[in-house]
Structures are given as C-alpha cells and as structure tokens.
Image 1 (cartoon, rainbow, N blue to C red):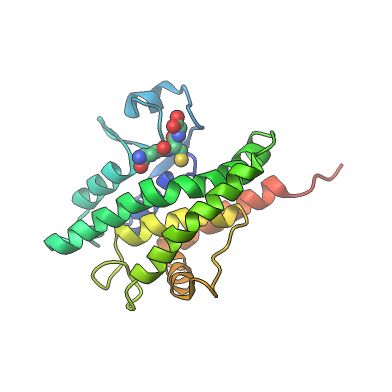
Image 2: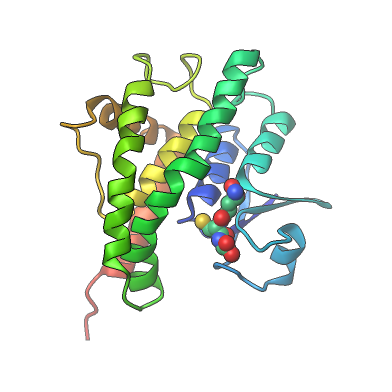
Length: 218
Ligand SMILES: N[C@@H](CCC(=O)N[C@@H](CS)C(=O)NCC(=O)O)C(=O)O
C-alpha cells in the first residue's frame, strides 16, 4: 500500500497514524505541494495530499482514506459503530480539517514552509492573525474534551488522531499550548501524542526538522 504525500502535512500524518494503529505497513512516497508526479496525480485528481494506492485502487483525501482503512482492517476500530459516537468522530475529524487546520496552517506555512522549506520570507502578520483566530477555537476545544482522556466514547478514535495531528504542525512552528489557559487541552494532547502510532511519526519529523534547521558547518 502506498501513501503519497509529505510527512509534515497534518492530513498525511493522520492517514499514516491510522495505518500504524492498525499495524498496516505502508510505503510513504514523498511528493511535494502540487507535485506533478503522474502516479500521485492519478490517485489525487486535484493534486492534494494524501493519496492512496492499494493495488489497483486509488483514493484521495485523508478522511476518505481513514474510512477506507478502518473498513479494510476493522480492528482496532477507529470509527465507532454506535450512531452517536460515529457522528461525533466524523464531526471532530471535520472540525480538525476545516475549522482548526486553516488558522493553524497560517502559522505553519509562514513560520516553517515558506522560510525553512521554500527559503523565502514568511508573512509574520498572517501567522499572528492565525494565532489570534485559534484562540476561540481552542477555548471551545478545551471545554469540549471529556474527562476520560479521549474525545469520543472513552477510547482512542480517529477524532483523537485528526485533532492531535494539527497540534504537531503548530509545535513544529514553535507554537505551544498555553497550559495556564487551556490546561485540559495541554494534558489531553500530550497523552494522545504519546500513543505509539503518533509518537513514532513525530519523533521522525522532529529529527527531520532538526536537520533542516541545524546551523551549517563549513
Ligand atoms: N481535505 C483534504 C485536504 C488535503 C490538503 O489540502 N492537503 C494540502 C497539504 S497539507 C495540499 O495538498 N495542498 C496542495 C494544494 O492545495 O494544491 C484531506 O483531508 O486530505
């Protein structure tokens, strides 16, 4: 099974974590933003990462791919069968992708992608505006986390992976959760990121980021 994408994308990380949680072995085929690679384009008609190839079957979009993997390898289930829990998992996944990620992306793009990967100045005003936009979103999320350490049904689900994945990008950009303002959120995210399916990916990414930002020796 092949996943096309870059490991630093929150959407690619989501799918890799789902695969890891299910014990699936996947090959990450590195493609960049808007990559013209024909195999990638065949799997992702609009050029967005991640895309998946499983034999002859191709699929784009992280949520579609997470649902595909959860159906293909049912255990451990990451999308509950219970109607209310399933609805909540889909909601948190959607929340992560369409409400949380856009302001987080302003920070990540302007403090990591532009200056470090693309070697051009980031727009710091846009990053700061992203940080301001995050505040009410995280106020809501902090209050929405149940006391049992998981977003839905008292167990680890796609909801936890999708939401935690966006925090990894924020951390790469030097933005860290203010534990005084969002104590429940800080503890929750630390716990979820310690889960092996995410911890392994994050450790690899941290190594990559450290190499990218290490001072050059002549
Ligand atoms: N809803 C999509 C979003 C995918 C997405 O926007 N990926 C970004 C990278 S983080 C991308 O490929 N951007 C390139 C583009 O928009 O052309 C998903 O969940 O997979």
